[in-house]
Length: 505
Image (cartoon, rainbow, N blue to C red; front, top):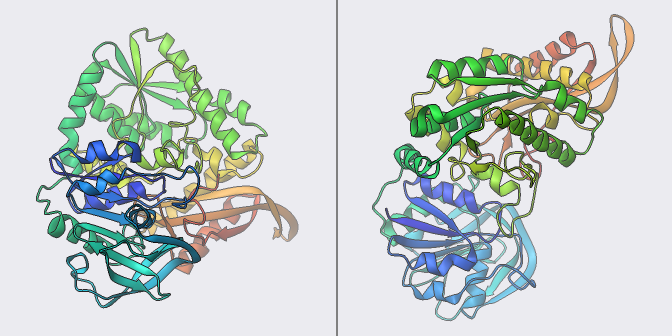
């Protein structure tokens, strides 16, 4: 299979580049700068993309790359930091400027195949302070930004762009990738995530040669697809376990068990609510909550394993964004720990199997549909592994847990009634420490503030707040304050990711 190598310089969008490439139907593989030249030299690699990153090319210890990457006679596209790295390595000049952030207009100066389908001026997404002041010898400037910075340059098969074509804010970003991959790199193979099912099953089968696999299931699409793939690979050697940590949405444990049984997978239900909730009581720090849940999760699994002496592996539905945000990629900033990536303690002995680690949420949904899973599972909103604990801001209390669980149920019910549930990426409510004076039953009442969060996204790497009709927000607010006595105020979150994250904690 022809493929593209994406060299990861530590930016949060490196994997988003790979996802965009896959959308075009080309397989993308991630590589570190240290292994890039060796991997890029393989015959099946037809092009190389150098990602963005949080560093400056002149910083001590900043990600670097061997100049041999440019001598392979393969198309190279540098994006942001990758663009600046090309300039530095090949004799150009990179300087610190005033920077460009957000929507920026670029003017195309040269009719080049990379910009086929672009207008003379287009809106792109910029996020940089360093810039290429002088291109390397032999390079031609293809485009400039409205602030006069070099927005694109080329020499032969080597291209650099200062903007981010991988984010949806660059309206013609997909067109650019199609041009680079199909017209410049001349890749003809077509890759689809649903076509990878056989390969995934075979990989699982080759790894699980002795012993059984215990898989944690929650009813979400990630864990359900993981369980089904394992079942296809090793059959009854899969031991599906549902750990009820007391932090699920209302009715979720029962729905999860029922669904998996209908597929033919037996589920071991473990009621561990008190074990989790006692440890969380009064804990305020977000990372500490995640650590406690991750460690308790592993302990409960270990207890379960003692009753299953033949279990040697633990399977989880870890996705690409989980890996990136947990700082598991060299050079990436740690945004927050995920219990299924960074939260497992060092004493945990089972070997991890993560069949979905290379996929994004939308790709997993395509795999789920190909496996014949019910649409309610395929399109279920993402739910954090630590559950409702990360939707409680400040000290954890059981009162707050009850409030946020009821509020989320109301949000989801009203969106379903309005036909909007599937049209948004995620919808939920949070509760914190702040309180608001209210009037209930003609009496003064001091109650909690509940914040409703509804976002639209394609991959969870970036997200925008959803412009829900006011009448629906009014209905949600009215129901929450009426049906949850402890709440006197409802607010709506209107901050995108970045600078915010989707989940509050």
